[in-house]
Length: 476
Image (cartoon, rainbow, N blue to C red; front, top):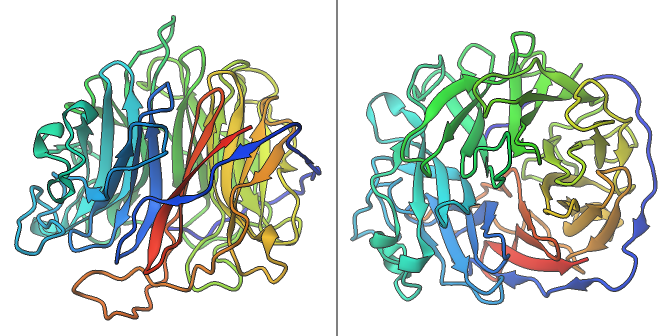
């Protein structure tokens, strides 16, 4: 949940993009978390068929933990909103104790493991333990054992692995201490779904920034071959020349190579010489290459115009599952407004040469919170908030941009037809904040998961009472 002051140097190119060719089907957005309290920072897990979905988000209800819902029909209908057990000692009922050791949980990650048929769930958890410890904890969710009629008890505790398991073990300087700026943060995950040579089928990878309390936050990774029941790591990903990092995104290529992208700067407060970096592992995450510059970021942002909620420059990545080329996306103000830019490797597996960065969808308005995912057929999908729908640069719409040539060109479609003002509602803590709190917070990311025919999206928008999680699917 922490953001840096970020930036870099060097000019880059821009390129106009075309609209989707042929018919495009966009489902009507539907609210997934119709609640009194906020939902933000979405993650979306999906099985290979695209029919089984699990959404997660920061849940600002009484449990102040990780909210959940799931769908068994491709997002047409969703189970009533609930929460992930095993993290906090609260539930959404003040009279019912929780099942975890921490006061607060958030920054959720959910991915589907085709080897086990389970959803692997990870949340950052803190508060309540001696010394203010912060841990990344993992559990699993088995839809076949879930009761959608029992949201008050997380669809039945028998669907979960309890207690949740600690990923970080405290061996790194910042891990778990939770004081003086020491904590693991902004984790992201992926599962190796390949069966061929070089792959580790079913291996779960999680990467994060490890804030060590001394002005540095190197990138670390851990992996599990049993749905997070036990872990190998933490393993250092970023090299010695890059010590202040964020936005770690792990991805697996079609040959089993593991990549982690991230944003780097010289220190926590700098707005100079920042860049999108990436490293790779060819042995299942055990050792890592040096970090390569995918793109300099000449003019990143540390805030958003016309907004009380925070936002700025982020870095994300994916791998074309047909060509093996790595696509790196970030947002930058080189063109004037904060826009989304993309670069890709010139050849598969070679991180030494990236193409000049191009604007994905040139706009005079702000674009932020990009997130990437790849379909098995090679289509790369990118979702982001896009204020191109509002000449006044205030209201946020959602755009999906897709590429079928490893990020060389992009086609774009609006997912929402009208924008929302992110300052309409505060993210209020139940039973703590007053009804009209001023904690304006949309989170730091939204989500997309892709099949060969569909891109499924989950994001934060304005509900009838507060910030809610919304879902839509696009068939390009």
